[in-house]
Length: 428
Image (cartoon, rainbow, N blue to C red; front, side):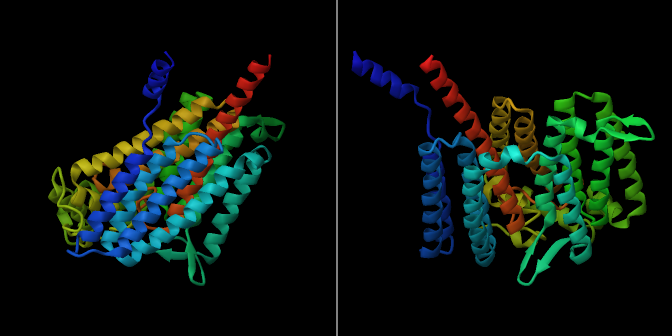
């Protein structure tokens, strides 16, 4: 009888996806190693390191009861595809990305381990807003313009994008508003201003800074997260509609008075009209996706170097070329699963601040993925932001790992609360 219950218990155990991640890692890095026709131990070492770190992370999360393990497994799979494609495009660039991956893992462990110790002390809406303004001002003063956008700070051999961290601060800012909206109830000439209108003014000031820096992709991302949080937690449909109308009118005016924006819209509407000029990026992206077909040319057998900025903005096009449309769909499915798990964490939280924080963080990942993939497939105008965990860039990867670490910490708080309640019921 005991054997029967043992078998039933084994059948009820959930399937552990970490082994599938390791198998995919082994397959991808093996293909990368053999693509030149000879065994390349360098790729095997990187692949083995990736597999070991993935297992160590899983074991750590399980042993110390640090929350759910599915989001890290999903991200591990996304990272595998991104690292292999970066190494395939350029060994030097791919190795730098791997170093950033190691740094990001360290930040993930630190964030997921220690955030719960300080999160109750970090809820001041004015504090987070001041930090964002300071980062904007520093960028305006000492920032460097790259590809038309003044959104980089260079300190010697180190460079980073403040906007990658501003988007995280913005989620904290919005969560502080959700948990304590009265902090924005201002009084001007004996008239009280509703907190939502104060919030709206503050957000549009931030968007103005992004416009000054020509960082339109991040501005769109911030605005989408803002509307999503206000709609879900404040249920202010008319307020959301007013914001959408104002931003829509502002976007139309900006397109008319800013030539570089008009070029982007024109290249989106009809890129084939100037295929060698302003439509070159998007047409090369579409050619790459089309040439891959359903199953792809195979890793190392495509021509991703024909795509401008392939390691950053157009990495999804390279994935579709060499892994096929099914490979591209697999990436979208993985991000969809990540968003689903993030929303599940959000639903399990009770505190308004942490609940809105989890929602804001996962929608940031979701909207960012939508914006960049939508741009490279010509669904929406191209904005030039990165695909989380996949595109090359230290700032992008570090900020993505920060978001992952925060989500992991929040899922850990749910687990600790469940354990506490279970012990309390048991003792009673």
